Image 1 (tube, helix red, strand yellow):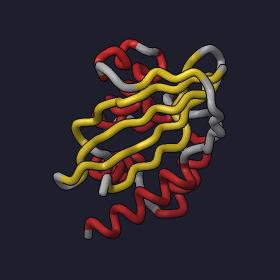
Image 2 (cartoon, helix red, strand yellow; image 1 turned 45 degrees about the horizontal axis):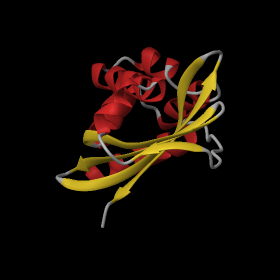
Image 3 (cartoon, rainbow, N blue to C red; image 1 turned 180 degrees about the horizontal axis):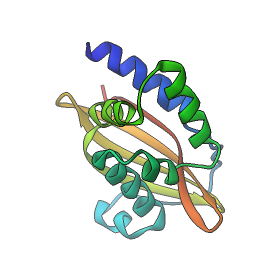
Image 4 (cartoon, one colour; image 1 turned 90 degrees about the vertical axis):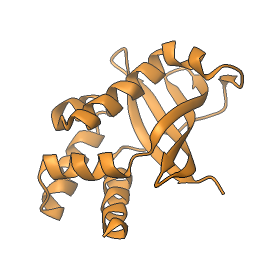
Length: 147
């Protein structure tokens, strides 16, 4: 059953979230992970996680890059899933105990690297972001087993 949910989540994340190209640039990495929490990029990502946890589909879409919302709506419709079901799947498959390990910003693009747990296993992730209309938005996310 979890394999099905992971497949659905992967489809939603890959097709539903916009891809943001990220280049090399200024980076803040290493050291105290708490310092990243005050950055606008991490605050925007945490807002997305909070919306997901609350099951608030519309608030979640507002945290994503512009083109991702309509794609996510289309994908949910094609799968025959309600927004509440989509949010439930995503919450179930999103790692817990997420720690941001670096923030790399170049102009209006940023990449967060992070760690988190899925089924008790440590996973590593990257979150690509873009600044749109003066606000940071989440684009593509990728998580994989840390082994």
